Amino acid sequence: MAPSGSSLLTSVVLLLLCGTPGIQGLWRHVRTITDKNWKEVLEGEWMIEFYAPWCPACQNLQPEWEDFAEWGEDLEVNIAKVDVTEQPGLSGRFIITALPTIYHCRDGEFRRYQGPRTKEDFISFISDQQWKSIEPVSSWFGPGSFLMSSMSALFQLSMWIRTCHNYFTEDLKIPVWGSYAIFALATLLSGLILGLIMVFVADFLCPSKRNKPQQYPYSKKPLPESAHLLKKVEQEEEEDEEDHSDDELENKTPSKKDISRTATRQRIVSPHSIVDKS
Image (cartoon, rainbow, N blue to C red; front, side):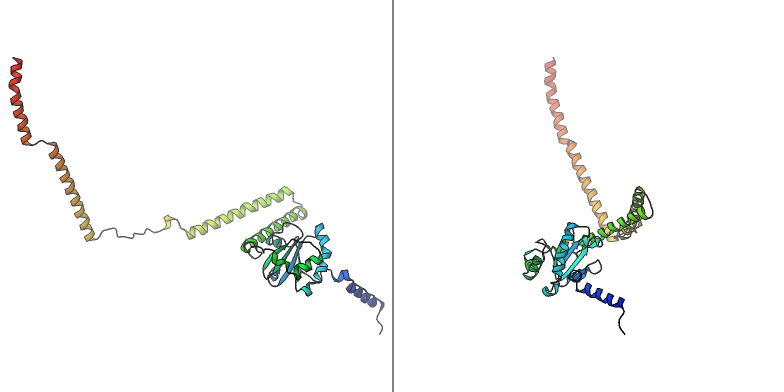
């Protein structure tokens, strides 16, 4: 049975599409990296491009990157791309501040490529191992570190807030100030809830002194031996004080001999005073 005209036309179109170089190389060798599969780049060798569809420089780099991707199998390197508009978490994880940004990754070590952006330069960068002359990104700022994971979560939260804002203003027709008021109330409520949780946790880990039972490391009543020793020490102190007071009184009160001497002196001096008066 001869094939129909529509089936022949469909076969011809498919053959033309498969045989066209531009269509054949269009992202065929380029892998798409997302938040779900980004850990695959930690194994093997990769060249990753971060781009945005609206970026003119990214659009100019597109043909060179596609041609370079065709050499991936020969160079034993994986060529990948990341759309930062769809993957904001990866944008924060890799600290993308300019577009396009190209990273080289080999066995978990990341290096930022800052050379010329042509197919020949990309090929020589891999084949001549020029990446060895570039200092890798510190482990503190590596994509898998806790710091960059927190940054990724922050970027995802900001994108979620933006999506909610667009939904409020465009779909629900809420005024812009109304959307801001909703986010302000949500921020206050979330802060209040987090504060209460922190207070409960702190009170559980470090309870206040009122709730603590009084603990006495020593018994209230001293032992008989210790009480006897304390009483003896007090008696000795009292005796010392009495001796000290007696000494002071002796120094202050004159003795009988001193009194008799002063009396005799007065008797001797008195006749002369009578003669003078006469």
